[in-house]
Amino acid sequence: MTDALLELVPVWGPWLLAAVTFGSCLALPLPASLMVLTAGGLAAGGDMALLAVFAAAVGGALLGDQTAYALGRAGGRPLVMRFAHTRPRQATVARAEVLVHRHGLVGVYLSRWLFSPLAPYVCYLAGAARMAHRRFSAASVAGEVTWAGIYTTLGFVFAESVAQIGAALGNVTAGLTAALLVVLGLLAVRAMHRRRVDKD
Image (cartoon, rainbow, N blue to C red; front, top):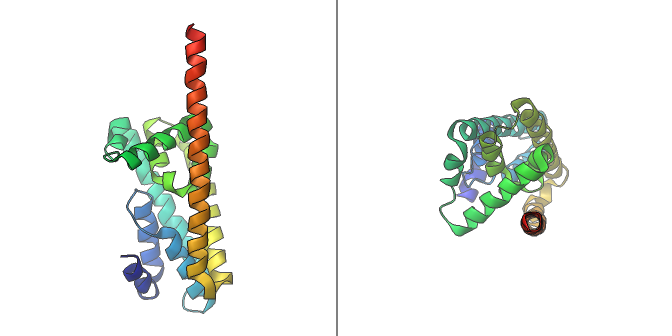
């Protein structure tokens, strides 16, 4: 599916980019970052306008963030847990929940671009936790602008190496996310230990 979508980028341009980034923010398995990289490379070759690529990526992502937040706010935690039908997803949702409750706005901001596997669930959970909408929106905007700026610029500057950059960034993101999960897990264990000590 990824290859088919990438081939459609020059055809549908910013509209496809916005649709894919929107869907990825709702936890649909879509290659949003790779598509933004590809579109940035196309902009370098004059096939797309760089500003249009950036605007489409940010616009679609922000709309997706707001939709996920609204759904989470309306459906609460039970709605979010419907995604957790496999153990890997249960772990991802659990880590996203720790990120929201422990780190708040910083967690929302970092999830938009640095810890992207947690990103959709962070938005749903932020809504379910009834995080203040203005605060959530500010962190979402800052994070999505950072994400779109990084991937659009990299695609534009290194147009001939988009595939290699995408693979490298994927490995870096996976490594950072794994490290974050370990840290969050340790924090959760420490918090549980403190509660037991306080009870004793």
